Image (cartoon, rainbow, N blue to C red):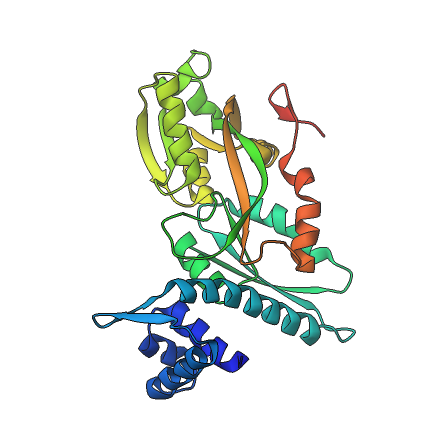
Length: 305
């Protein structure tokens, strides 16, 4: 079997058609179709079937795609390792961060990766999860950090590696917090609230938590960016939730007060990769230290030193 023919098949399958694939690789659609036909003749099976003007994978094509994913993932990893093997050359680490993951948490997760003795050149992209997964699928990224596993409705072959979890802390500016004498969580009914955007996992879980405690709340704002939500919170616009693992960071600002801990809300964080087993040295360094980042103990509303 010619690996170049397999690569052309892989590109067409990934991009959903010959024309789209030809835009990504320097080869004409006619030549690309011919190369795939040679692969099918060599294997003795049809890999695509036509459905109107569209190409669909046959059962054999789906199987071939799964193997091609693994083959070219290993090929990309081999190229990366050999390219940066010479002494003095930093290891390149291309990571995507879902736009709903707090920036400071992403930094804490990534910090061990950039501390490797051989040196690391990190290339970090922030975007919507679906866009990041598309880049992950064609090996433009080594890893994606997300607050949710790979969505089942996306046609992307990737693996979800759970990093850990965190509870939720509710914070408010001290002046705003004085507007109510109710205890937590009932105090949230008497304060304007700032909530994460609808697409985030924390928003869905907070909504379930409201229903559990029968809290009728006043939502004053919704934010995709946690830092922006916190900035509005510091301006006394509303109380807001944050991962409890970041509580120490927010309390150090001096203007915010802890309203209460919602430990029954559990936020999960994942490393998404095209490989079943994580092998990149930066990823291994990151996962080795993840317990120190996510498993912080809270005592009397303050993180342990």
